[in-house]
Image (tube, rainbow, N blue to C red):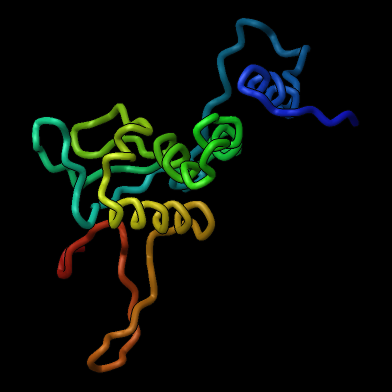
Length: 161
């Protein structure tokens, strides 16, 4: 197998080479197979600790992040901004998987750049949890009674179900 260098121009071509080939025997007019619900959760709600402040001064705290794909993790590797500054990788990656922040649905790297550092750190941890552990819960210990319990990092308030 020949190794190829991934560039912005050939990313789609390389990724298509790794996708399974379509069956030639399938009729062209056949409807797509019905999707079955396997209980896989692909989008997770969150609430930012501080909130994103847009150009009009509106604070957006609630948002949603989808599960990352292999393409999402490969694309930043060919981004020139990431090549110049590897720390920029998380900005590009987060901008690809955040589906909305408040009423903002066009979340791009510029939006993530203008977020407070505490919110970016929260989103980096949230990304890690949903993509590696598959949930948004965290085990915590009460500093007073030292009792252990779980909290949902997606933003639920105490007493809410």
